[in-house]
Length: 422
Image (spheres, rainbow, N blue to C red):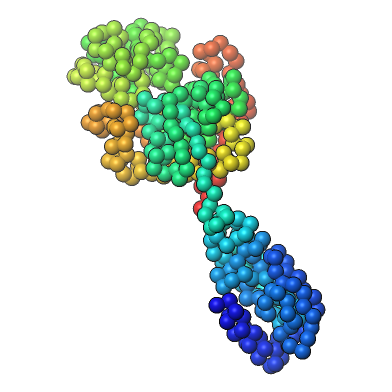
């Protein structure tokens, strides 16, 4: 096929030369980027000598041995008649000997010829035409929460490499060098980054709207009625921060109430037996508490005050490793796909969540509206960190960091690479 085409082209060019449409001549002419045309000496043949590159370049040279659909394309040899190549046809996948096809360079002209435009680049491919496999990734999360489930779905259904998801969150990411990614809320990002300044927030997994569920029989009919009463939550978490934020809307702080410690499992019981007047935590614990006390329950929620931002994290060391970074970028793209499923196909997503958490489907339906998956790194993440840093620092008796000091904690380059990838 390649030889018959060359003969047709040679014939066409010979006619053009005879009619004076193209310049014909001799002289040495080397390939620009390819492995191509050898030199040929001028002879009586008007189409040039016996250069190994072929008599006429119909495409620009491909980088490092790339090839066009019609076959290997090199610069015209010495003495070639030439327009030196019209625009090259895009290289086909898998023929690049260097493992990644580059855009074809303009064909080099024979004597008197005109340089042709660059050929279109072939798609990148590894040896043998297949892309290199993605590296295995190890990810740790709070595997008891709804918020981690997009990570699980991304790992199981959308990442083309191998990704394992286990418990531990960012504390495990930071203490175990075999872990590549970890997810937790921004409160933990702030706490852990003091000791580990190499921690980086790279993407938003889930946003959750919290609520306080209180008991009317405990004397609570307004948010201000919580003054002097007990509220159960988990201290030093985003839920405890939410309590403080909500109380401030009625000129109270967490110092005006008694914070009782509990767990996702024990909070509903503490409210139901009257040990506390109110509870708050991530879902579905508040809904379980509300169901336990029925019509006695009253809910306080203000979405403009706060939402928990669960982020995907890595470390500067992992992000600086080219192979790991390639996998992390691909995983963020997989996470975007998983989040789209959560938005567009909620029935399918809910089935995955109920299985992962072993919770009742009807319970999940009740709390689903308090979760959102937007498929991005939320643009106000730095503002949230700066404001919340004041509260986190107060919990441990240290000086809050400034915006400039907190800025490196967020790295949006992975998201940008994931969005730019084909």
